[in-house]
Image 1 (cartoon, protein in one colour):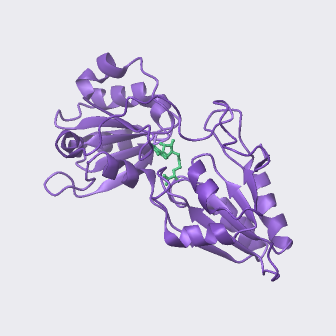
Image 2: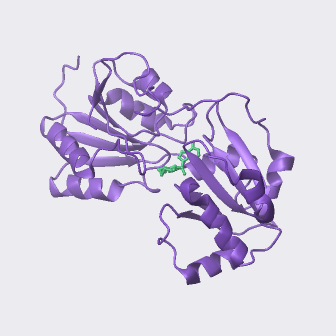
Length: 281
Ligand code: SAH
């Protein structure tokens, strides 16, 4: 138990893409210091087991895109504010980096409105973890001079002009939260006659022991993967750099099947100790 009374503080922490060693030293220190951990689904369970103070309370506030198990954002904000009012130190843990496809803005606004001090600790976003662990440099010289982080989680998110631009660009394109709309994504690029040099890669559960990388041309994608359901989470990478995977990949696709991240549905939400988590869903 802590003997000193804390002043409240919220650490907004990027916990990295999966592998529990891909987290910053600063994040580890903040997690160890925290009384309350508010944790997303895409945070390595091994990070919680290794670094959380045994007296801390871990509250799972995971969201799963399009699934019923989800904590309303307003509830997460309320939890942060209420615990801060009790002078607790709070670690708000998110998968990857906190500023990429996360609701950090809502949380920052809630903290600011309530005059609660905070610190933002960056993490390795999934695109960078996947690129490294699949041997695909995102801006490899001679291949691409830019990279874009996008999402196509719902069909009206990108307008037709933007699709045209995407089909024509030499930038590497990384799509988050888009595995559910892959057929449509591939169809769009085919209709817009994307160049044959550009390939598509799906990286499942990047940096975890379950990582698998699948690559294909756009022409052959549907025949090869049209009926496949990719594991969650998966990242979609498009560009000429995908061809580098064959040459520079340093990890074999594992034979192992399974899901690394906790989920209400796969029944592995509570890793070890049943009392460890309190459900906020
Ligand atoms: N803040 C996170 C992204 C949250 S959005 C980050 O910076 O990485 C959630 C999406 O991220 C998933 O749908 C998936 O597309 C991607 N993602 C997160 N972790 C991943 C992983 N280990 N492997 C593949 N994709 C991942």
